Length: 254
Image (tube, rainbow, N blue to C red; front, side, top):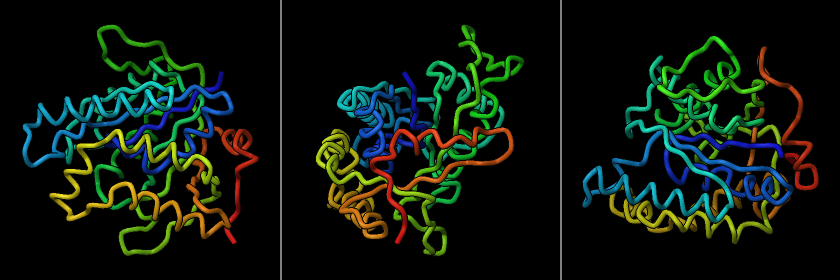
């Protein structure tokens, strides 16, 4: 069974950005996992960091459980997701426990540094995960992965770069008939809706996700869609692994 790991910065990022793709892959037989760098420990103005972390970890577990997948957290702090040796070791160790064939992470350019640094950490770790001599330092380390996983990037939040320019996906996945399930997955993150309402003045958590997917769908002739790009640098797999599995749902930009 092929394995895909969506490795993102915070709880709910995977559901917003690639929840439909994960649902598609699960339906065609893939084993699915979600990992985050943090527990969302700064996502509240009324609970302590420990309390909101427990809450958001439980919500992330529930969302992954709805998907029929696994969830794990790297244990970093919000706003402190940084590319450094210690964090690479932690990400490699977690990634090795899942041994994915494919990893999906954030766009290298996104609206916040946590997302961009998570993307860098995942990129470096995907390259190192199969190296026998790279040691994570864990007291009980997982064995090296059998091979380097294929690496894919999700759309940036709202699909734009730092200056508002569109970051165009390489290809699109039609998620129209799994949107209800995607909405249910995201609704597991109840505390995040409360935080966004308080901190950002947004009280349309689920509808905002749907409007982004609808805007992406308009670019490829689908009601709702999500976009991906594959990392094709030297040393990473170039085979179109996800494209082959998702072929019935692939769409091209008009």
